[in-house]
Image (cartoon, rainbow, N blue to C red):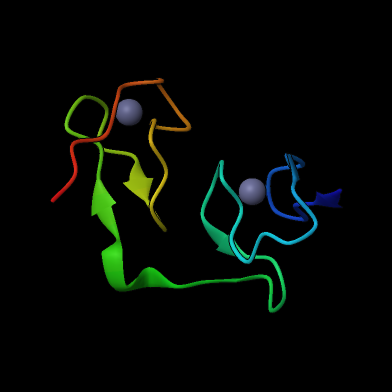
Length: 62
Ligand SMILES: [Zn+2]
Ligand SMILES: [Zn+2]
């Protein structure tokens, strides 16, 4: 297990990106190419999570 230093989520040790917040687990930096805002609450979504970290709304894929 690799624990995400950003959100605390435990990821597979082979994982390159956190499956919760999308941070790069090696560099602890976001790959912000896909940054967008939640359509419900406007929270800045960074990385490529499936759900908004703030309100839990499912993120539409672009
Ligand atoms: Zn995370
Ligand atoms: Zn939201």
